[in-house]
Length: 242
Image (cartoon, rainbow, N blue to C red):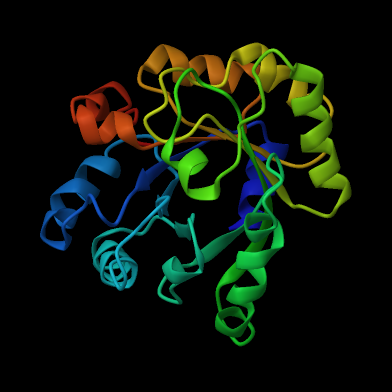
């Protein structure tokens, strides 16, 4: 997945990931959902959530793989969401926070599951940006997002992640966010990075998606917008023949 993403970025191609929370998607609804996803410009399916019921992730991934050829990427909130049924794993470190459990603790706990895994493991620096209201990520991790006005701090945090060896930076305002990451922040962060930038949270319109791409996001993640309004799929239809 990472090599393919790098190749797309080099060609100036953008990616769109549809994020599915295993607690919010019944296995029986997967086939119809996937049909809608694959009619759009989506390039990836992400699976995960801040909190997910035990044993909910693997059955969902297996159902997704039965109906979709898109790469299935784990975006786990904790070690319990890791499943070898997926194609790849964003090995997240919450570098915007100061809780050691989410900087390195969960990662250490994941090693026994990953040591002999065939998952493609992609080190990812995860940065939570203030959006106007508390999010589930903030509550679960007991960390505060970086203030939107502190653009230099956000950019420095992203660059620190790159210098630490992260392969991706994931800039997010959190699931159900009131506002997406502002384009000016995306642009400022992107111009200082030599690795791909993922942006998610609060994107609910085609205009906001286009703004994120234009500002420099290489891959945009949308979840809640599809959960709340499935007509959004129609706005992201593939062009004929694509």
